[in-house]
Amino acid sequence: MTARPSVRRRSTLIAAGLTVAMLLVAGVLALIGANSVVNSTAGDSVDPDDRPILEFPPTDNAALAVVDEQGRLASLVVATLLPSGTGGSIVNIPVNADANVGLDTTVRPLEALLDPDNPAAFFESVENTLALSLQFGEIAGAERLEALLAPVAPVSVDLAGPVLDGSSDDTDVVVDAGVRQLDASMTALALAAIDTSGASYDHHWIDVDLWSAIAGGAGDVETQVDERPVTTLDDLFTRLWAGPVQARDLELQPDVGPFDLDAVVLSRRDVFVVFGQISPVRVAAPGAGLVFRIVVPFSDEQISATDGLFDSRTDVARAVVGEMLSFENNVVSVDITPADGGAPELTKIEVASEGFVPDLQASAFLIYGEAEAVLATERIDGVDAVITLGTSYFDLDADAGGANESTAETDVGDTVVDDG
Image (cartoon, rainbow, N blue to C red; front, top):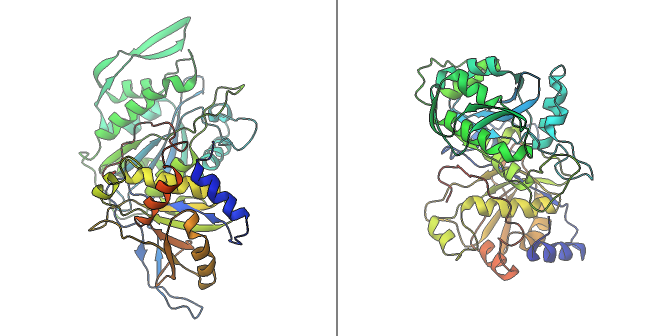
C-alpha cells in the first residue's frame, strides 16, 4: 500500500533521529453498544505501584469453516460473544484470504490450506491471518451447519443473484435470486455451495448476505442461558442467538496482486479495528513496539466539521491504526463511543510506565498532532498507553493533505451500529 503524504513525512522525521520504541497499536471498538471495554479489578500488585488495574472483559469466540461435500472451504466466519455472554458478532472472512496478509512475496489462500483431517493446523492459519486467538474452531458440513442454524430459521434474505453450485459447465441453482424465506437446511446448503466460475471473491457477497440475514434473526430465540463458562462451540452459538447479533465484513487491501493463485489480501488496519472493537482480549500484538488502546470520542458534529476529511469515527480509527501499523506498532483496543460534548481539543496520551512518557511526548505530533503525554492514573492489563484523540488530530491531517487519499481502502458493507 502506498503511504499517504502524511505517513511519508512522519516516517522521514522519525528516521531523522527520534529514538522512540516504535508504537505498535492495538484498537478496541464495540460493535453493539458495548461502551465499556475494560472492567476494574481489585488491582492487587506485588510491586510498589498501587494504581488500579483494569482488564478487558472475556469474549468467547469460535471460527466456523463451512465445507461442501468434497471438503472444500465454502464459507468462513468468526463468531464472538458480547461481554454479557449473549448476542455478539459474526465476521465474514473471504475463503481465499491470504494467510501471509500481503507480507510475503507468495500468497497462501486459506481455502488451499484447509485439510479436514487436520483442523488444528487450519485454524492456526486463521489465527495468524487475523492476529487473533480463537477459543473454538470447527469444520462443518451442511448437515452440521443446519443444526447450528436451526434456532434462527427461517432466514429472510434478499439475494441480488442466484446461489449456484458447481462449475460453469455443470451448475445447479441452489437458491434463486430475490426475496426468499429459507429454512435451516436450505440456508446451510446455500452456504456450503461453491460456484467455481470466476474468482472466489466474486461470490463472497453471497456469504455476506446470507450471514447478515442469519444475524438478523437472532435475539428472539427463547433460550435459557446460565452463568456457566462456555465449554463447546454449540454452547457458544446457543448464546450467540440469544441476543442481538451484528454481521460484519472486512475490507481488502487495495492495489495488490495480481497473484499466481486466486487470493485477496485483507486490510490489516481494518482487521485490527474490527476485532479490536469486538474482542480486545483476544487481539494479538505481533509487533515489537508498545501496545495501545485508541479512543475516538468525536461527536457527529465534529466529524462533519472536517468537511470530508473523515466520514465517521470508524474512518478515523482506521486512519490512526493504519499509520501506527506502518510504523510497526500494535493496536489492541479502539473505542469509538462519542463522548458527551465530543472530543477535547488536545490529544491525551496516558502512559502506563513513566519511563515512556518523554519519548511518547516527543513523537506524538507525528501521528496524533498536538498532544499531552502523562502518567496514567490507572493501568490496563497488557496495554502500554491509551490515546484519546482530540481535534488537534484533524489539524494534523488537514495540514498533511487529507486522510482519505491512499489510505481509502476497498469499502465493503460496514454494518457497525452508531458508527458516527
